[in-house]
Image 1 (tube, helix red, strand yellow):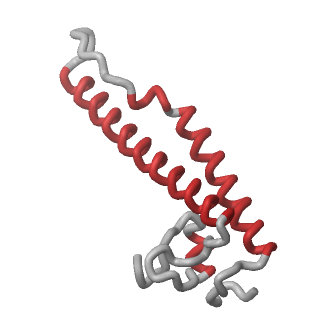
Image 2 (cartoon, one colour):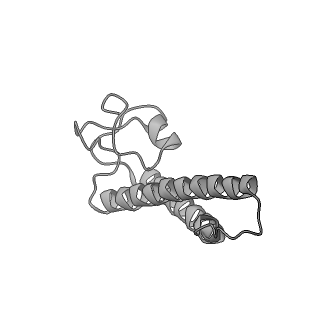
Length: 119
């Protein structure tokens, strides 16, 4: 199948295996990153041994870590849903209009749920 062409309702097995592998690798990377950085989002202790600016910096770093964690959790959910759609034979079809998602879009965002028009 030519990259960039639209797909029929069923993707061929080789392309499906390619996208499944990409999703699984992406899932592992995100899970590893989340486990490595899990301490970054813990509550900042407000003891008197650090200065006010250091405390503000620590709080800002904590909020950035929490936002990163939230985004990673959302991406993991999208990846798991994409794998479920593969298992149901619905991967590569837009969740809104049911038209095929362009393979170029899937190359960049393998966890996408919508075609470019519905996004």
